[in-house]
Length: 158
Length: 216
Image (cartoon, rainbow over all chains, first blue to last red; front, top):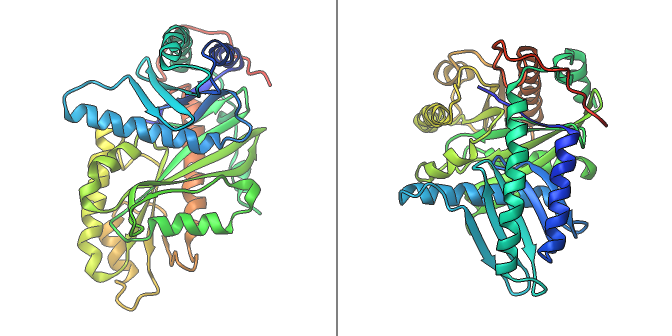
């Protein structure tokens, strides 16, 4: 059955605040949140020169592949992954088994600090995503209930 | 699983191109990429082997325009077609909204096509989807080849349910956009249906909630 994730302004603002704070407190360059299907949810920090859409898709692919490996060795999941580069490093963690939190940082920070700050941010984010999931289960009006065939056709007219 | 973001007023959907090895899934995406204006597309990513066989997936983000003030974005993925990449194929189907099955029309690939459809059905079921219920389009690719089976024959074997199907030659682009448009349309129609039932399609008598107010 096709289920939807619906993100409303109020929750988005809360998520954004947590991500912004994480950038500051972890001395990170970039923080972004992705859902497990590869959709970017939010990003903070020095994102201007980053292709966040591609990053989101590849991160989700990475997590999916790692999750597949975990299953093969009878692990539930690897909840934290660390990639070390020459300049930049990547810390990836899974929040509440549903969203992926990515932190990019360089020598201005450290893995220890990032892990510490991520732990706190994860708890807050998990609470917000629990609310989002609960809201998603409630029946509610959607702008897409009213779209017409003409609306859909107009997308393809050009 | 579509993702509706009221904050950025965006709707994101995921479409997966499935099919046997060398049937032309990546070629479909490449053609779409080459023919789409730069402002409507993101970077195309191909995780491929040195011999250009898809190793994990290809990815192409596309913007189609706006519906009721919402930007509609489609994320197109291909799976690796070769039989032994089954674990990867399963992962890519996660959260799919619509599937294109690209069949290789060559008569000697009939068995590979049939195996791949069956594999699609099984892998979808593992993710909780039913091939008979999700937005689904079949493309008979490589119609230009002399050893192509007749469309009737392909249809009987691969599309007994009669979902929308198209003849294609992905290398020259014939049928590529027709296929994409149709699956995108089916996904949006499905979205409307899902919305009518409410939320995630639960439809049960939940506690009454004040109408949600999307801001923007």
